[in-house]
Image (cartoon, rainbow, N blue to C red; front, side):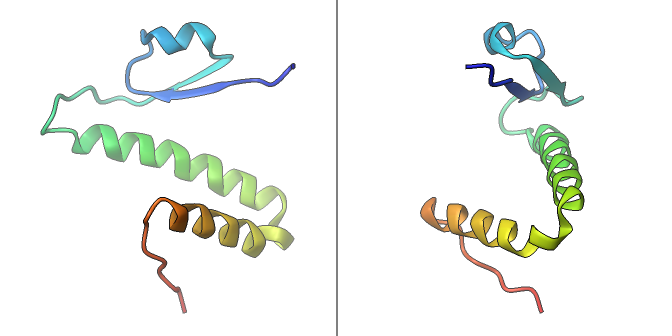
Length: 83
């Protein structure tokens, strides 16, 4: 369908990489239970993408944030209000 796929991973050699158009690789590759570095690395990549997208249409940023919160609610995440 012409949709480009982005893989965010700490293992660029993952079998999923063959199906991705873009690979954003984190720098850490720990094993459980020492996964904090990998989690921070991946979270940072996601935060950068989110911030860049939000900056491209800052007039709708609140609407996007609400959609993200709603999606998190469906997965059991707690909603935190920022005042």
